Image (cartoon, rainbow, N blue to C red):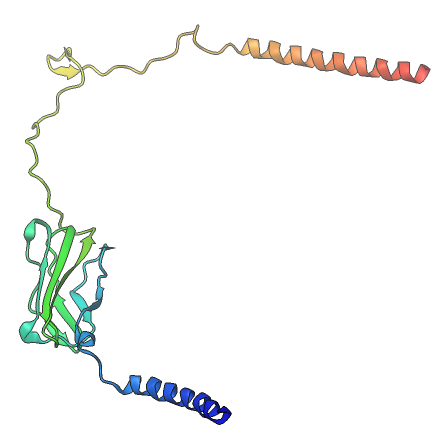
Length: 205
């Protein structure tokens, strides 16, 4: 009985090791063949100040050019892309920015397992030829700031208000400052005299 238990204990690790090794040799399941987006440049949600020359999409597997469709639309649904170029699992599309704003890169392709893959990447171009709304008509000439007054020569000139000079009553009185300084000095001298008298009384005691 003891021998059977010992043999079982020895066999179980071997069986587990063989099963673990076989798991690496088994081919990928159909779910692993499902393609998907792994990255992009610019990344999804990015805000870029300089427009890139091309948009790059990176996929898990190599997409088929015949079944891959990529579009780039900008503000006001303006098409800002061109024919894609395939390089392994990477797809690059020329970027033709028209204005600053939100750009949407839409992609659609088929996986090797037959499942369609759809998605989009959004980024914002912060600089560019921004769409400016129609400007309202502006006045040709600016109105004068004051009423026109006649000059001795007969011509008219706009009255420009002269700079206001503070009246004598509004100017700060410098004499009041001297009185404040003098009063402060007297208070300081009185405090020093009181301190000296207090010290003398302490010595006498």
